[in-house]
Image (tube, rainbow, N blue to C red; front, side, top):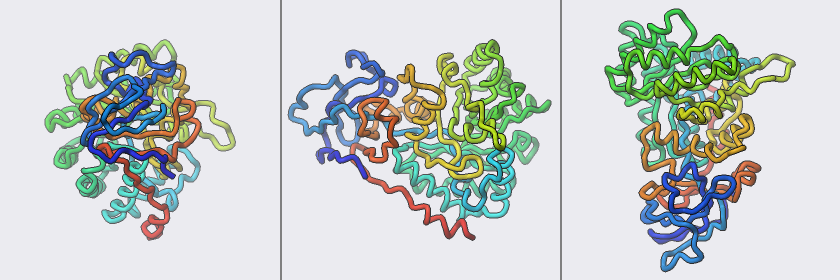
Length: 438
């Protein structure tokens, strides 16, 4: 069921009494004071798919056609900056045997070696994009397993999907291998393939005596091809895992000026409190960003058979954000051995992240972590925000406050693209039965 609101049919219209989080506004200087949750009650004027005016809410929209939202929350379209849609939805044929990280890794590798081909990937990856789009996402970055022949296969399928979806979703892709794959001629070939596909270089920073050398090599490959980096870093609850510091040091040592995003960083949550400011200072100085994946890591981390987990397994995002480091929340995996659930729904990601990480007192900065901050990071200045000149791509909820927003799944949300309401349907899981049975 979709929220029963009817947008005006004219090219120019006004949305009155929209409740918008301060964190997604680029300029609130003329909007008065926010409410106690950090929201402004405003009027938005839309003209031919763009936001053309923002003002404190008025009792009348003048001669412009209007719709009164009666204080309902309005957010910009979501940006999901860390996903794995090449693995998505393989759970029915390759479930995780014990819910552990090692079980996930072994199972996913076996599935890729046995089942993945271009046709199979195309079906599952597009299914994931349809889910994300139906939930209100406007941009998505995926990691693609890239060891051996998987790289050419995955990036070829990705490029086809990027073209198919270019009018609906902005898509990016990063390679995913252990960093030793970038050594020698094979590393150059992989970097060239990624560059030709317009992607990012990515990988996993396993603790190793060779890691500094591997990072220097990766940064050289990225600099030569003018590529940004997206890394999996310290996805464990081992306090001795501190490769994040090595990434920060390598960026500064090499004078690397591209963007470097570090995902997970779970081990920060179990290291001595006195060490955290020192590490975050190094991260901030190197200009790194950190994306936390609370749903997936809460599923995997601190799991032992017959024992309730004691640790949440997520990065200390409150401290990271307070240190001035770009901080993101994202989906990660969906219905694969690394996470048995998920639907690429950023409302679910935001809601559960708030609960897991206690991001509610105050909650005002956090809407930006799924909208404006990732949009800035991936270079989308007219999306992920409510601003004059930005695209009229947003989500309207039947909720006026954060407590109303987070209390329900918001399945009746209204998706607006280019100023027009759309009603994309979530794909039926049964569509995957044939491909998963092969």
